[in-house]
Length: 322
View (cartoon, one colour):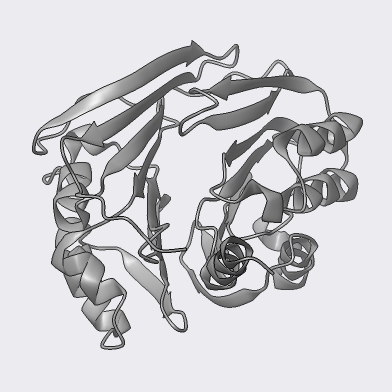
């Protein structure tokens, strides 16, 4: 075995794919409440993605499940599920359509980001697309360049019309640095310590949080307040660090600039911003450039915006022996 091959094997053993696959489904008004399906139903669906439910938090509007790989949020008329690692989220998606029937689906979207080590995945987006289209029809796009960070999205072509207030904001951060990154990679972490590092209570007053610290490191948190949700997932490994933040909050009316605060704390080398029906504005962060952006007007009334940013002179590269 060559030295290069041994180095690749070591990298794969230490590696965890933080970027998530994501499905969001809105059901028709005639469909009974999704929350009434009960935890056993959702446990079965999560298992289809090769994940499991670790814990949950609920209020009058939403059940938020923390998963072994990311999160699941269930409201009466919709659900949102994210899974990371080598999970097979597409099988959970097709299972849901099979269980409730295609006629119960008002709108379905499936997103997937390019992976660092795509050869470790059970499928590609093209494979997932084939499976989805056997169950439900729709359109698909790639956003971003193939030789850089890019995202895929599939969405149904049914005659659904979204409400203007149906907002999603996503911030995906790569190659985090500084004191926060060192803490998130250390053996000194606690859930309370990570919450304080990320200033969750300060940024998100009134939210109920449910979080989990993985071994040897890695952190996930769900938060709900009424119908609003936030979720953060941290994969801090030095060579492939990734942190995601997602919410349905209207960030334009929040007392704090949440994106700017997270970028300032985590100091990523680059990051993506994805917005559905949300105002687009650059945040107050030190010198950076926008390497690319795109806007797509979906037929359903969603305005999708994507931008990829890079911080100026973020890191000094050193040669690594292999």
